[in-house]
Length: 441
Image (cartoon, rainbow, N blue to C red):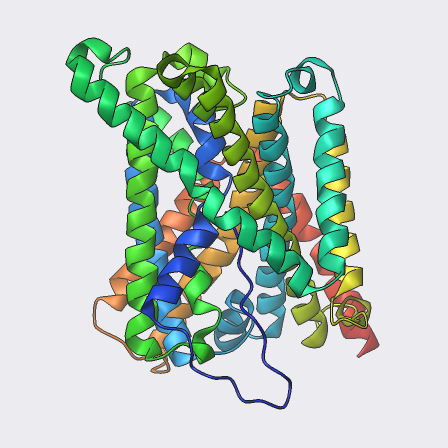
């Protein structure tokens, strides 16, 4: 889950279609690869090889959702993403609920990113995992440091994103290369957890967890009015980027399942480092943990900036307090930034007694469930607009969007009672705000 914010043009200038296929593909892959793959091996380890079944379902469902987003981006190249699409189909009130849900998913997910950064850092500084509350304190310090950096403007936040984007790919490459070398040399003798059959309940339990790593697949649809030949470029970038990233995730997780005992993997605060240590030594393993931490840091930096843009868009659309639309002299929505990071702080403090892995799982389940509400609404919007004759596209768009909606609903239910309950409470909290804003207008 990593965000890149495209550079904005001066207000007087018309948008230029300057983004090609390569740039859009990089945007999709870059936004998807964040903290998910770096801590998920530990979260998925108790489910064994059934986790791969969850990956297959998640990737297939995400591709269906990606097709719906692509079609909508072609027909309605407006700013606001999910908010704009749902407003076209169901009106501003429904669009508010979707945008609110998307925003909740962002700041709750950012809490998970902060935990992922500190969790990987604990491999280098073991005291972080050993002292109660220290991990939560460092996570919050990281949140507010990046919040203040982003308050200085897009350029400051963009510099951090630029430095971290390239570095985060190194741990993925390292794990794949190490696994390839070990399996080529040792063959089946190197395997500690042979592939087994799939358990249906375990597969279901992993669907929402794996979806966390796929969030951001819609990235290429956001700057649709700046993409060259969007009718072809956006679908290609979205589909290829989603499939390629999903394939990398499956290979990495399969490598860890093959070569690391499930118990050790489940107890790990830094799965990539613990995977590499027996094969390349402690120094190289620590370097991999550092790069994994940098990946989570880069993802957190980008999404902190994005989490402020959604309430700003709602405020400018008249369905959120205008206070959130106020900009600082440098054009930054400072009020929205501070409130979003403040909500993250409350969430982390309310759950700091959990272990880092437990806190990570808890937050990503809530975040993913909230984001899936927006994805579900977008898929339904595509179906409604298609039947209304307002959404052109091939005949297969209807069943594909229907499958995307079904997958979203299934993944929400698979999140479990606690995550869905918290998500419902957070979603309901937005209704009084909408009523209050409507009453004033």
